[in-house]
Image (cartoon, rainbow, N blue to C red; front, side, top):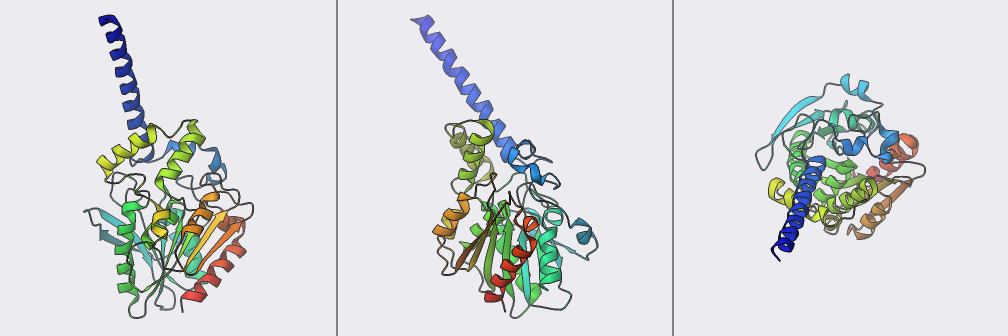
Amino acid sequence: MSTVLTILLTIVTLIFLVLLISTVYFYRLGIIRQKRKDILLESPDLEANRTSSSGDVPLPEIPWVEQQAFENIDMMSFDGLLLRGYYLPAKVPTSRTAILAHGYMGHARNDMALFARMYHEQFGYNVLMPDTRGHGASEGGYIGFGWHDRLDYIKWIHYAIQRAGEGASIVLHGISMGGSTVLMTSGEPLPQEVKCVISDCAYTSALDILTYQLKRMYKLPAFPLIPLTSLLCKLHAGYSFAEASAIKQVRKNRLPTLFIHGAEDTFVPTAMVHQLYEQCSALHREVVITPGAGHALAYTTDPAAYESATQTFLTRFIS
């Protein structure tokens, strides 16, 4: 009997150790801040995006960014992190400002360059591009998947309003994780100066996208790694994967919202944009699916259509 008990205890101990090691591994892989993420480099769904610093968004406009007089803006987060943003006033003074949100493992000056140029050069907006916590020049040892970031973006909104002055009009425009970030932000009480939201290739929640990627990249089921990693994230980073939910937040959103997604996106599956659209409580919401576009490639796949859809939407809600 003692031999059987010893064997059982050994098996249980080994299972526990394997689960513990696996949980810590996936937490470090997905959540802990690192200079690069192998989860992006290994993904077959991002082959077309390899020119970006993160592997997430293409970078055709970096030279333009370097030629602009962006101001470095520092902001203290609600939990004591020093965050960095980049502000570029419009060529002609205006009260209109675009606040841009980059993707997972991105950097605002790199990954949002194309969009900053569109807003500044073509639409005549002021541009504010924060480095999300845990990214770029901002502090933070973990990635928030948009959840804690939504509170950071509220502070950036107040800064943009103060800079723009009386009659300020703000659009939130995010890509990939940034798209989910602005959707999560939209579910919070926001100043009336925030007029609309544009979300490009957003995921429905951290839980959904991590479950999807675990299965797609590693052929593993969600249980038990996702619940265990989520618990570790809650204990260490202060949020669970289920909490970081864009779909729950859009149910509280009343702002006009434009959803954009590539028809061929397999990194954040296109089905997610339809779920977000259906659950969004905004009286005015639109969805644009770009044929032939992979993840975060809607703009570069069809620039004219992207700019037209964006400008038409903005014209309706920002004077």
